[in-house]
Length: 333
Image (tube, rainbow, N blue to C red; front, side, top):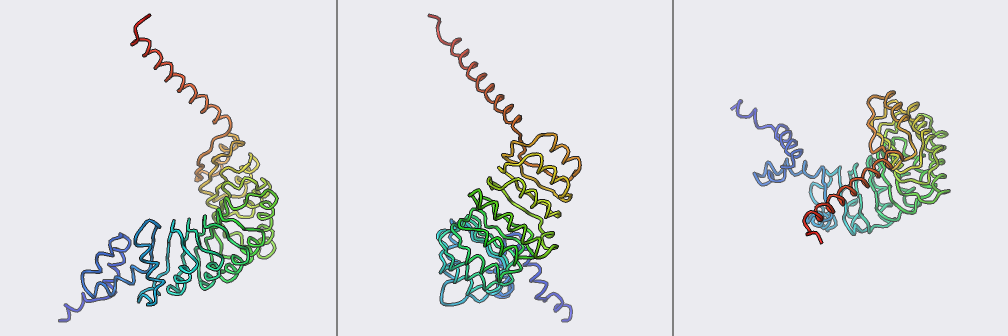
């Protein structure tokens, strides 16, 4: 009898079911027995990832917005709902009310909710990951109120969100001292305003807490075409522990590449798509100083011209070949 009891260990079953969750096959085990359901359902509720075109997304929203609270909803810590329209403020209120322990929240490409929903997110003081990329218009008041209480955020993505001003960025710099990854690409399209945003963010970080910005490892300036190169260099200089940097379609020159060489000794990924004013010599020098760096999509103006000439030559050869073939087939007049 003693030996038979050795293998009846709930923690052992939970450990096995945890690996089934990683393998995306845990759901089917819920129907094996009541015991398996008892230990499998809480694991399944910990991390939920849904897309707008998935029928499960609609079912989940109906479940959390219903009158009866799901028994394991308090277990949910990671929630991703992407491309779901409309994700109304009422639905987000239902999520916050039903799932109080979320620390990872991803609403990428979800539209339909208002600043009222952002106010609801203040109920998550332990929130560490927040992705609101392409979620539409965002007001300063609601965003400032949220980040003022969610001070543990390590990842924040507000790319392609309209209505963001320097007030929001000052509040982010003041409140989010644990911030490691921050993306605002495409959010600022006015020349003067965009410069002010970046400058204010750097200024606040510099004066409030000298060590604070040292933790930033990810910066995304992609398509921020109006940010001055001086401010980009200041940002790079202020974040010496950067590992991922996106400068795609920014009007930078070799000056920025030299600043990266001096300041970012730990940089592993650099996106230079659309940055045509950089020389190959500057990139070669950067790679020589940092052998671990991966430079992606680099093509300067000379490379683009050479590629265009090559494409024109290819099209000409195709047309010339077709013309010769037609001449050989058609009878001579």
